[in-house]
Image (cartoon, each protein chain N blue to C red):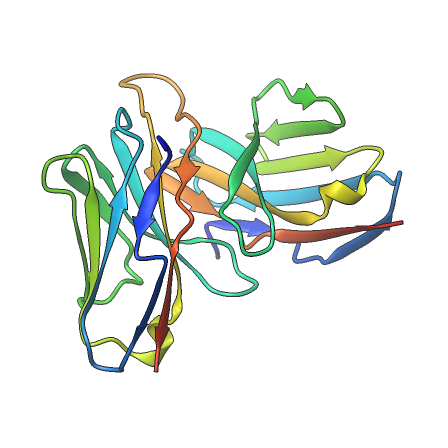
Length: 117
Length: 107
């Protein structure tokens, strides 16, 4: 399978615990995005990377959230001291962004569903 | 003001109807525009890109008005299989999604 893959697909954790999610993008894609989605809402932008550089992080994101893409390939999203409000679907997407010209289509993984109890 | 705003819906239409969705965006520096489709409990998938000249793909027509910062999607001859949530997407630095408009096409 050469699409975007995310791991785990589901995670149930107790409030206050730390969780880490992984995303493996399509191999030739240089851009990688993280989104959070709750029921009835569109994907909410969290952060994105161009290769290994984190270019933007949402102001809505608290300091408990951190993301890395150390070698410009896979990425991890960590949530520290989870709260019940963190329960959501966490989506990763990747795209091939040219140096000039339009953004190309982004492909999404199937997401990681987080439940904080 | 939200970065990307869409008609909240839901839209409930009979088969064969024509339905239009609207979307406005706040950043005039936006560069690329898309419509994505998301089925229930699935990931979003690209429906079509949106170009300044307007573009059509079968029963789907997308329009962009940069001066008004407005994007539209028109679906003609609706099919049951068109039932989904339609997401407006705008990029300037990173991709931003609207909240989505839910469409249900009924027999």
